[in-house]
Amino acid sequence: MRILLSNDDGVHAKGIAVLYQALKQIAQVTVVAPDRNCSGASNSLTLLNPLRATVLENGFISVNGTPTDCVHLGVSQLMDELPDLVVAGINNGANLGDDTLYSGTVAAATEGRHLGLPAIAVSLCSKEEAHYETAAQMTLDIIKQLQNHPLPRDQIININVPDIPLTELKGAKVCRLGARHKAETMTKQQDPWGRDVFWYGSLGSESDAGEGTDFHAVNNGYAAITPLKVDMTAHDSLDAMANWLKEVK
Picture 1 (tube, rainbow, N blue to C red):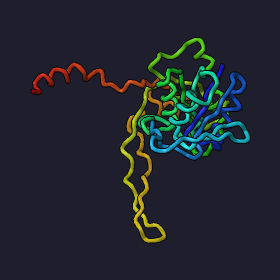
Picture 2: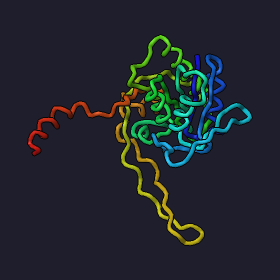
Picture 3: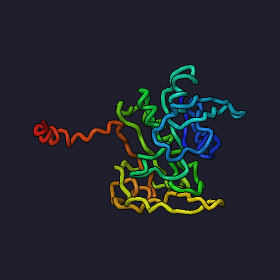
Picture 4: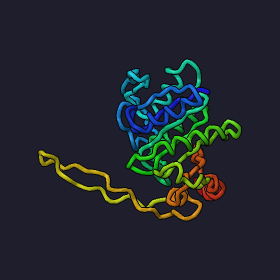
């Protein structure tokens, strides 16, 4: 098996190093990741500047672009053969609910799917970075199952794992995305020269975190496994919209 591994925390992040070591047990792994932290990059592409790929001493490939750039470049230019799977992670922090819209980790997996490849994103739900090995083992378990149960062509898997020892993980649950309240207001500060600068506020609190959601699973000691569709069409609105559009001249 050939795996293309990327992330949004950057090529030097601890999470991608831990996942690389785990994936090497089952596959030939090529790492192509951003040269810096690109958290929140979503599906952005670098269109106005050239991309450069640099091979580091450990064999990882560093790219001056976004997670989406890295996957696209890895598949189209840097790998001798197409990968069998694209894996993104392990992210430092959760990608639950609405977070998936902004996540560079999820976007890297989505780009793999856009290129016709099965893909998964994996995140450790803590900023403490204490138990990456738990998320790595869950990723291995999911990949082994995918070999016998392939994903539909329009889907990826989003994995979120609580930051606890593997022995304390209760298992895995298939979940829908939950939701947060809107983010806190941006904060205004001054730089050393007295000029105004602005920072995003903290994430909003959970607003839809009941049983069946990814929030609920992680909060109760389970890995949350969520299939995500790439197609963003609101299918349940098509007929209603077609009816009222008849009135538009």
